[in-house]
Length: 171
Image (cartoon, rainbow, N blue to C red; front, side, top):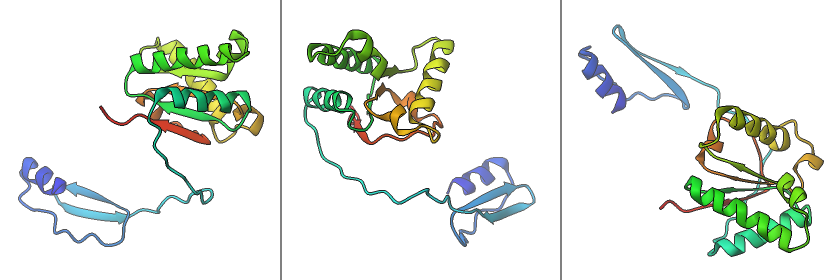
């Protein structure tokens, strides 16, 4: 349907015949007609099993993240819907960690806040820190006991992995 609309808007007078062929593929719509090319599907590095469960309170998430940091039990990300939610969660996690005996400096070194309102230079620096700790070249010691609290800005083509993830439902 998208190709049909595009061709009609361009005034080319033909429509997609819907002959999909093998998938995934790329469709080229040009004045001379349609061309389709099959593309290779991505190969995943390994198979992964995932377990999902609902967490009904922010307090419970904060406690779980505190355990991950305190016990160095993997690494985690909490994906928030707004900058204000991310900032509040970041501060609440820091407060939880310090109330449970971690120094403020250590807590701040283990928890990263990432959102779109940072200055671009700060944002670039934070992004590099995230890629170093959670990217494909990171080692176990880089990852263990670290947490990122972020908004959708973290979804921007970063090749990063987390052992635990918490995602807010859409508002």
